[in-house]
Image 1 (tube, helix red, strand yellow):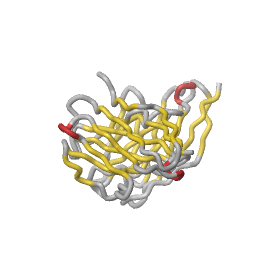
Image 2: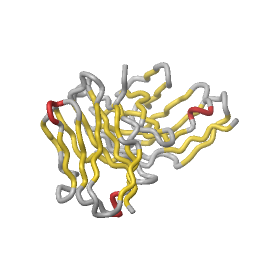
Image 3: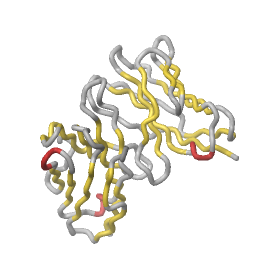
Length: 116
Length: 109
């Protein structure tokens, strides 16, 4: 079974430029998560989708970050414009659902963003 | 949300059991204990989870104390490929995983 796929794996951009990350979850997984991981820290949740609906985006900095999950499968996370402090690893995860019995999360390899 | 406390780092000899402790003294009755690990430059990998009873799978064993205030992840025969950061997470009755800084396990040849 294929795992969570993310692309690109690495991205280097100049500050103030836009950037987008793509995620394809495990087939059949209705719940999708985007996390941010700073160096030496654990991942922190940015947004959670149930199918195509963003049900928790309370930690997403909405002034520059946006996300979408059209058709309830693939998802894109965008930053516009990027700032130096956005340099981090962006992780995507998916789970069957969000209940106790279905919410074990499986993570992709992440996209390492460097903003110069 | 219950907080977890883990040692910052540990070493283990290859072939020996690695025992990774986690303290979660404020855990409540419906909160699960999850363990993930993160190998360098990869995303976190699910290992095991449990509520009250000890659990075992092909990767590891999870021992939860009777009062549930602490747990131990056991890798029975550690290999060099087990070198990673191990995260103990107490998951509240929702989907939210709150990761700490984890334990950096180094398996020594």
